[in-house]
Image 1 (cartoon, rainbow, N blue to C red):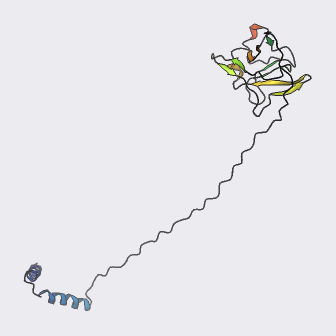
Image 2 (image 1 turned 90 degrees about the vertical axis):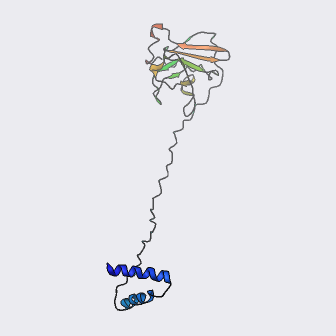
Length: 200
């Protein structure tokens, strides 16, 4: 401790007086170094080199959509729809007549097939009353035929829906064109609620 204090006082004195008293101390240190006094030499540390890893992802398979099967539509028959003068048309009159089909072969929805006397689509559309108070608009076309399943008199107009049969309020279809409104229904009014039964 006494030597440490003396050493510190010597350094302070040298700084204040500007004398060269520190030179002998430096010479002593260098002499000790030459005689094996350990001097710590920093050893450079190696810095790891970051090599980017390349991950090869296999190409995703190209998904080719499968086209929906096309249907060759039957040519629309020539001629006009008959003017029935307000007369109600019926389902359940026998084969080849107007058909109320509760489950279609393609979608499982309600579909209407009219007799071959109806040669054109109704230009103002056809509707079914639904049991929630709204109307379901019927349609034809797309990937399915408007006129198909021809009988001896010609192809028949298919009118399709997007509802299941139990959504219909009654067995009744209303079709409108410029010259007339045509109602398709059942003769037996007590059967009107049997909407999930086939009527042809």
